[in-house]
Image (tube, rainbow, N blue to C red):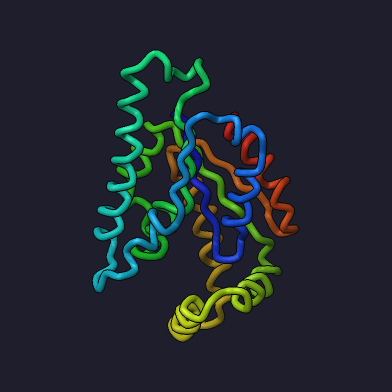
Length: 209
């Protein structure tokens, strides 16, 4: 089993990079692939009244049980050894970095157990970065492209935190600080130029798939 967690602020290009990864032959050649998008890893809790750290811990453990089940299948079958090239290749869009920053007061240590479990499941983490001077314009660009519900959420957030560009620069710095804390192999990739294919190729080289 080999996995990758893709993190980054709003407008960093996570969805575009995932599409670019899926278009690469190295990904397409993998016989068993699993993508859990932000709808599974974070946004599945949007209907809850109480969206606290424990609610997101419970959600992430549900995701991890999917991976644990696959790991048990792999361990029971010689056909699915690492050497066979048939092991599961999984990709997570957002996980405990986002959830700690958004719902646990930025305390990544809250999800230490999640981090250690992902490390055990052979997961690496990549944080997509946007040059800080470009964050405001990237957020504004994405704001115009998204639907009314997302725009309304960002407006509420702006009322709470002030300037969105400044807010997301702070969030990005928190992601980078989290890399000093994680047990997983990690790296950052500059996505300022929106060259999604280059980002995808760099990710697969780091991921070694």
